[in-house]
Length: 434
Image (cartoon, rainbow, N blue to C red; front, side, top):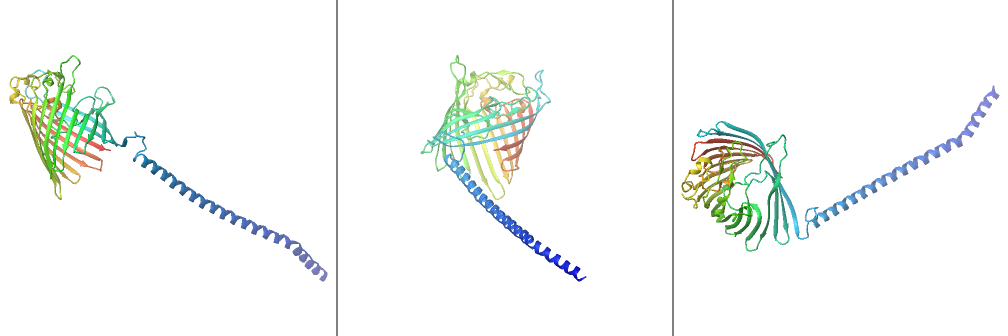
């Protein structure tokens, strides 16, 4: 029994003697692996820190290079001529639904237009460019829908064919130079430089020619220009020209101006298909030999209170060139009117703005030969197929939804001065400026 116990003890001691070196060796390997793992993790952390520092430095480098490039190009990545300091863009898109209701109460022909109505969608898109040079010149150009009409940039949806596309035309292109003396010179086709209510000249009319302007710190201003209205073919002896001058003062919210617009006699040589784009067209051709020598006066006052802003204005013009030896430019059988009795026009208007809302009203009365009908406001009396020989009440309202987006409405009630025709026009606009 004792021998058996001694043998067991001896066996256990032998096993312990043999296994101790192996266990020690396992512990040493584990410690080494743990140490290596810690070294790897420390190395990975160091690499991540170095990558973050490198990425941040690279980001700063790229940003600095971009800022330097923008500074070298005056805020633009476009490559401009060495004499051009900057180039800017601006434009707007207007989508319009329009309804016209035309009543012919005369019943003096077989083609009576009584009860005619028209619903249509229209759009206007404009894009303008402006370059300024280090030589003191401003170069402007613009594109617009609407084709070649001087009084409208509207493009009617699907007017000629199903889902037809619209046209883009050159709206204006001019060069302008400002001198240190307060004088500026503009050459080319440009926006109307004269102060007016927007009735005698449509807001889309672009004058072609040369304009000189002067203004000083006291508020005095003067504008003079010579323009090519209609250039006839090479066999014609002359072309229609306009010579205009206007002077006035604008100070402390008050603007007053007196002007003179002289069309040479060649303006009466132009035969025009009146209302060629109008849905209610009778294909009546008309010509007149009335001179247009228009004296024009404008006065307006604008200001603001704590609650609203306002602008009230009045415009009066008379065609001193109209006489009883001429033929009226009134449409159709009404061209038998005596031009000397149809030589006056006037506009009264007011605008009020409250927060994001704006309201406007105009009353316009333009006798048949008071203004050159091919350039008057296209909406003023379109519902009765007239450009002159009409009076109208015009109501406007708009709401500024965002800084650049607005919605608006216009309602026009028009009727003939000499005649019994009357009509209504309603427009609803969505407009975005950019």
